[in-house]
Image 1: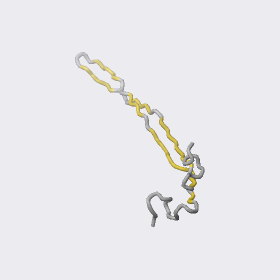
Image 2: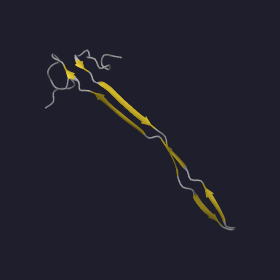
Image 3: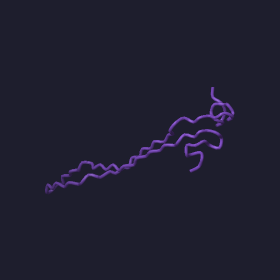
Image 4: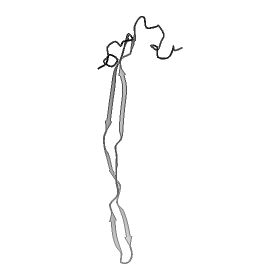
Length: 87
């Protein structure tokens, strides 16, 4: 693990929050109703099975635990040096 991902202070003096990730991927199978056809002559009923549709929906959640702390001597600007100050 690198110092920037294990929750300890980074080389910049910032406390880095622990990343959190969760994902779910479950198969979903659904069968559609059968189709019926009448053929003449002679009258015959033929039943065709409905199609089976399969999908694999996926959900992902990514975030972090805690709030990063800005230590003294980092520059004093809000944003931790990531592109300027806010406000």
